[in-house]
Length: 264
Image 1 (tube, rainbow, N blue to C red):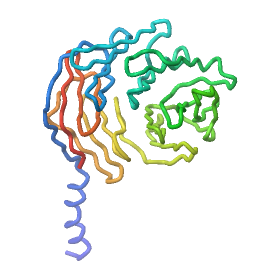
Image 2 (image 1 turned 90 degrees about the vertical axis):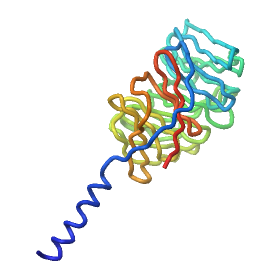
Image 3 (image 1 turned 90 degrees about the horizontal axis):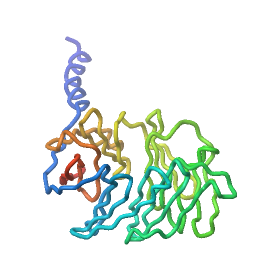
Image 4 (image 1 turned 30 degrees about the horizontal axis):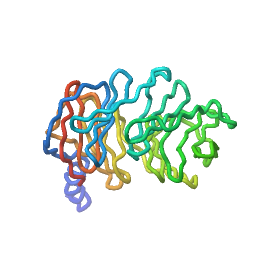
C-alpha cells in the first residue's frame, strides 16, 4: 500500500467527523402562559412584547399596555431595540409609528408623503435620530432623519430581494433570496458576510452567528467557524422564536418556553 493511500485513509475519517453537524443542548429555565398570535421578544427589564389580533402589547408581570391602529393594516415588523422608542412598521401603508415605553404614540411617518420618493420594505432604528430604510424604488439602503424629515441613500442599488433583515444602531444586515448575507454600516460600507443555510425562520444573534429553523428543527450557525449545531432538548412544535442574552424563547400557541443557550 502506497504512503499516499495510507495518508488518505487516515484523513478521511477526520474529514467525515468534521463535516458532521454538531449538537448544542439547551437547558430549560421557565415557561409562561400567553395569549398571542406572534411573540415579538423581551427586553432587559423582563417586559414581554407580542401581537394579538393585530394589536401590539407590552406586558410586565401583571401590568399590560397596548397600542392599536387598525386603520394602518397589518403590523409588518416591530423593533424593540430601544424600549424607549419602539418602532412599528406597517408596510401596506408605507408607514412607521414610534411609541414610548408606555406604548403611547410619539410619531407617525408616512413615507409616501416625503419629498424623496420612498417605498419602504425594510426598516429599523439607527443612531442619531435616524431610521434604516430599504427603499424598493431605488433598491438602495438609506437613512431617514425622523426629526428633520429628510432621507439620504447611502448605498448603490443592488439586485435581489430581501429574504430576511435585521438592524442595530450601527449596522443593517440582510439575507437575499440567494441566501447571501450582507451588512451595511451607517457610512454606507457594504460587507459580504458569507452564505447561510436555507431556513424557514432566522435571527442574527451575534457577529456571523445566527439561529434558524428548518423543517421544525432549530439550529445555530457560526460562519466564522464554519459550524452548524442542532439545538437539542427544545420544544419541537413552535410558531416562532426569539434569542437575547443567552436566552432562547420558543413561542407555541399557548406559552413561551425559555431555555439557556451558550454559544460555543
